[in-house]
Image (cartoon, rainbow, N blue to C red; front, side, top):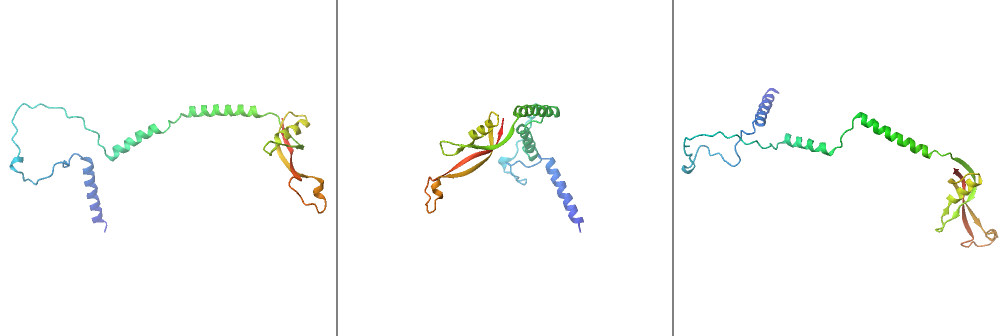
Length: 186
């Protein structure tokens, strides 16, 4: 069952191979075959014998085939991709980066202590709490220079009349106060 198909496949493969290996053995595109019929005006004129000079053939132009175009693509891609470093260059870069990172870590490693307490946050001009000053006050009360707030707490502080029976609460009777409860001190 596969024998006729196999011979047809082999014949087609051989024909494709012959066409691929002999690209110049084809009809020119401008000339059309005339099947042996020529008008009298087209009949060739016999060449006059004379001294023949052998000229070197001009260099062949590049064949713009598929394989050639793929080759060009690979050549262009080499210029677009970054060059690879050798293993020793890669290790040197890695060592330089780790040295820089180690120096950065040693600069950051100042002794810090966490303290607990309660210090009021100031109210900034836009109405938001400014807890940096509260963290600094909390740390200074424990003998440190400055601090960063870690935890805060908020409480509502109201005038005593709010707690009277039958009093209707008015805007401005209560205000929210913020406090730093834990800070990281240096």
